[in-house]
Image (cartoon, rainbow, N blue to C red):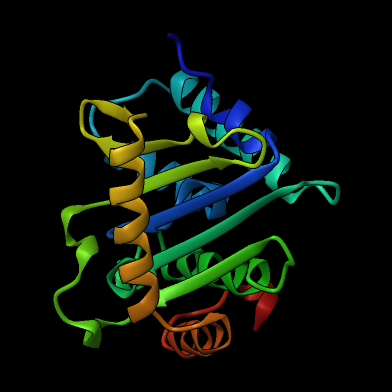
Length: 196
């Protein structure tokens, strides 16, 4: 069975749970952050390939941010990803500001797993769980790897990753404390000239 595209999954009514270990999830990235990240990850991309990848990412984001969206995004970002400056300090400041703004939306929860959480279930790497409101049997786990995404559809695998997500969520800062940490991290970076 061919799986639908990620764009299709974002458009469907349901919940997306993402754990990000070393980079901010694509659905929350600014265009500058995305561009720097995509340029830095092999294989090398032509300017045209980069343009297409950025357009796809922006379309997915628009589906989530649409005021009529019935998709809920719950994300836990490891604090390490927030300290890794991707692009310039100004671009990273803008990325953190975007996270802070998006965390105020009703359909988006952004939590941060702090350094002092110690060893945790998410150390194995980044993953996303797509849960569909109308059909639990179609839930899918996506694991990002260097050679491409790996999809797990078996219910036992989905349940295992849901338990892992619950474990990292339990150790993470809630939305309010996460916004406070984002504000603190932003104070250590140079804001863009139009924000000074």
